Length: 180
Image (cartoon, rainbow, N blue to C red; front, side, top):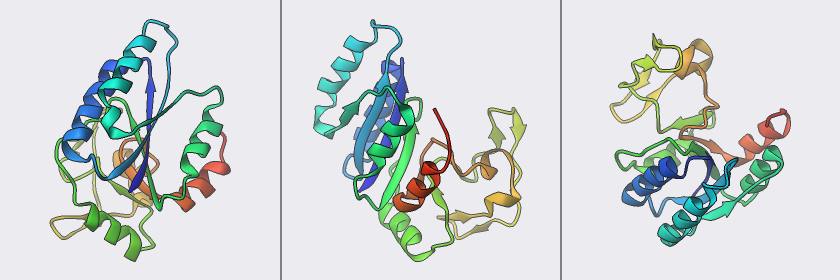
């Protein structure tokens, strides 16, 4: 199981699309936690509807007043691996989680496994600039690269968009930094 923390703020409609894609492709692979809040009380009834619609996924729905404390609390559940998602992420295809677990277990130099990045990630949408890859090793299923030699999407391993980490390592790092 991959402990998954999904961030959602004022976006129950986008969250619904993500949850539909998870139900279709990954329902058995995740332990779900949705960390959400609404600045507009009109959204709360919509989040309540999602809780009912996706009750089969056994989601832990939680709000927060202190974001960092809430994130750290959700990561302390003894899962070997953890991943963050945002409510605007969507899964298009199922992944081979046995392969992902094997890579993460056997190759300790691997910082994270990205479900988002691949050979088709040509453009960094945030910078509207082409991604450039150097020294990539690929066996046709898995790509490996040194993130410290890259910039843009491939040089940002701490993305909240489907990067799987070893939970113990992730907790060590997050406890040392300030974030809101």
